[in-house]
Length: 377
Image (cartoon, rainbow, N blue to C red; front, top):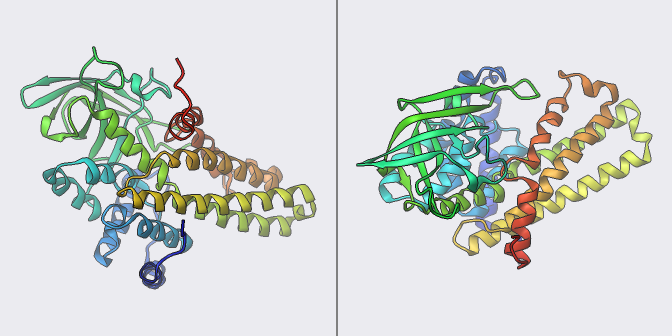
C-alpha cells in the first residue's frame, strides 16, 4: 500500500501550513481550563476561523487522507485543540454524514462546521461498565416522540453542549445488541439534569446526565429504530480510527521536549532512560504509519474506518501511558507538581485504556473481526 501523499495532498498541506503561520500569532490566549463557558466560546471561535478559511469540512467533507494531513499540520503548528468541539467534529458529525438523512445532514452538520453548536456523547452508563450494549436507558415511542428515561455517565462536555449523541434501548425484549437506537438529544429539553464530575486532575469535562421523561422527536433518530448498535459501530470506528491521529503527533513532540529536559537536568546520563525514549520514538513513528494505513484502507472502503482502528487504539492508549510514565522519570520529584508540564497529562493518560472502548474490548474486537477467532460464550 502506498502511504505517500499525492501532489494535490502535498499542495493542501503547504497551503494549510502557510495559513496557520499567518493566523496563529494573532490568536488571543485561551481561557482557564476550569472555565468551561469560556473554553466553549474559545473553541467555537477557532472553529469559525477554520470555517471562514475553508478548512472546516475536512472532518467529513474531504477524503480521510486530507483529514489526516489537517490533523498532522495543525498539531505540528500548535494550533488550538478541537476541545469542546471534539464530539461534534470527530464523532457525531462523521456519523450523521455517513448515516443520516439529507434533512439531518442539512440541520446538524453546518452548525458544527460554523462553530455554532457543541455536542456531547451519551453512551456510557453507571451499571453497564465496558459492556456498552448492556445500556438500560429506555426510550418509549409516543406518537412522533420518544420518551426517554435513564442516566448516562462520563458524558463529555455535557455542561456546555447543545446536542447529545444518545444511545437508548427501544426494545427491551430484543437481544441486547438489537434493541438499541441512536438519537440526537437537544440538551435544552425538559427533564434533563447535568451534574459535573471532577476528575483526578481537578477538571470537570465529564458529567452525569439524568433523563426523566425527556421527549425526543422521532425525526432525531439516526438510522432505523433498533439499528442503533450498527450506527454506534460507525461512531466508534471514527473515534478509534482517526480521532486520536493528532495526538500521535503531539506525543512525538513531547518526546523531543523530554529529551531536551533530560539533557538539562542530567537524567540523560541514564542509558536505560535513553533506550526507553528511543523505543517510544520508534513506537510513535510506527503508530503514525499505522494511522496512515488505516486511513488509506478507510478511503478504499468508502470513508468509514474499519476494525484496524482497534489495533491502533489499543497500542496507542498504552504507549501514551508509557510516555507520561517516562516523563515522570525525567522530572523526578517535580512530577508531583501539578504546575509542571506533563504532570496533568500523566493523570489524564490513565483514562486512555478506558476511553473509546476499554483495552479488553479492543482485544475482543481484534480477535473476532481481524483474526477470525470465535466469540466467547
